[in-house]
Image 1: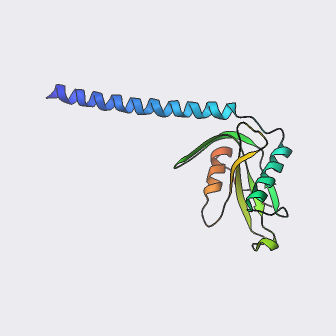
Image 2: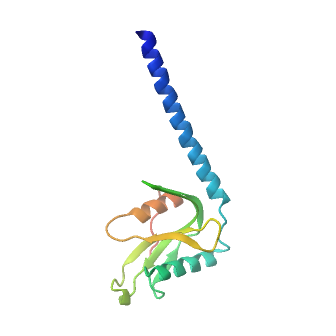
Image 3: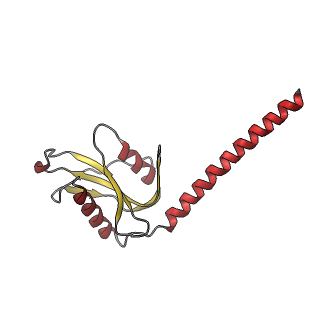
Amino acid sequence: MPRARFSWLAALGAMLLAATAARASGVAEQFEAAHAALRPASESAAQQAVVAYFAAQGAAGAASGYAFNPVVNGIVRAANLSEAGWFMCGNTSRTAAEGKAGRVLPFIAFFDPSKPDAIRDGSIESGNFELVSAWCRQLYGMTYLPLSQ
């Protein structure tokens, strides 16, 4: 009986080691992808790309105010999302024409890894959730707070 228990425990241990190794391999690949991504040409180019992206999405008008954090290289993870490369976080404020005057909302923008001055995806926080702020904390550190206008 003790021999059977040992083989079961050995098999369980092997499965745990394999799962840990697979996860470590995935993390290593994400770090590699983040470092391989092309950096935006400049902070100014990155900021222009963010404004153009959100204007094209209809999420924020050209008259909205923006406050930008510097571009940062890293990895963002969520339940079924994982992106690696260059990001920019900040805030946008709504104008009176957009119906939410004075409201400051955090945003995150993910730069296309192969086109450094183009945004692949982005999001402006809405509702009562702090999803965008949570992603920005992953990138800038736990002390990240949205910028004030």
